[in-house]
Amino acid sequence: MPFEAIRFDVTDQIATITLHRPERLNSFTEAMHVELRAAMDEVEKPGVARALIITGSGRGFSAGQDLADSAFSLQGADFDVGATLEKNYNPLLARLRALPMPVIAAVNGVAAGAAANLALACDLVFAGRSAYFLQAFAKIGLIPDAGGTYSLPHRVGMARALGLALLAEPLPAEKAAEWGLIWKCVDDDKLMDEVTTLARKLAQGPTRAYALIKQSLYAAADNDFTTQVALEAELQRAAGATADFREGVGAFLEKRAPHFTGR
Image 1 (tube, rainbow, N blue to C red):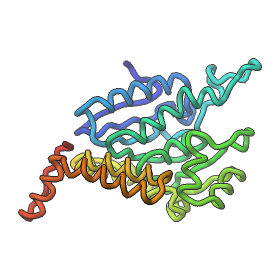
Image 2: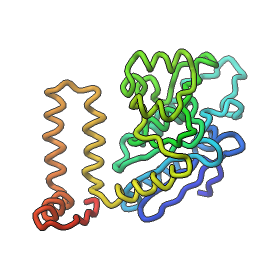
Image 3: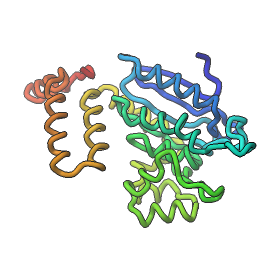
Image 4: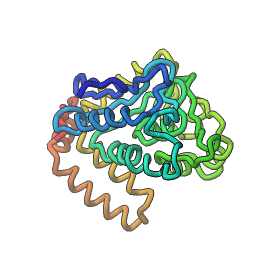
């Protein structure tokens, strides 16, 4: 389908989704979600991509939900904010988490509301030095959504999660990195170069193992120790059956660089 609210590109098995409504700070609309679903359909096709980058165009990552979008109308007593989460945001977050490849957020400028939490749903989050994260929900009488109530306390602890959610104050990228909310803060002019370099490295790596790493670590938040080590054995068995494992061991023994194929 033709894309207008996003840009979608695949180069060297690196897919890039760019939120592209710069005149509205890349805020989310119903039309953008339709395009995001279509882009994810492409990313999920076998052999298309081995890494995914998500970023924003212009001066910001995204201001979150576009409250002026006609599909987000407050008119009528039957308006249901939760329904927009169930239809659009929650399925997108689930797809990103389950995607069998590394997902990298490149946060430029503001990442507010649902967009901040969309970025935090990615496996690795890079942010430009001028970027900031804003849990803006309390300003309009809502709770953090798009996974925010899960990712915030898991990443930075309850005290900081409550401060971010209740006070709705911007968190600069450098402090977000210090707190462990994101992976790395870099200079603005180096953001996309650094993210692209990393994505290229990951796309040449053992993709199947990366998928299993994601599955195991995300499961750990809800498992007890006995359940988790049993899962480790199950997933390690799957990793050990891959061609990439055999290639990795062979390369180590032969003292050469491995050539991984993602199988």
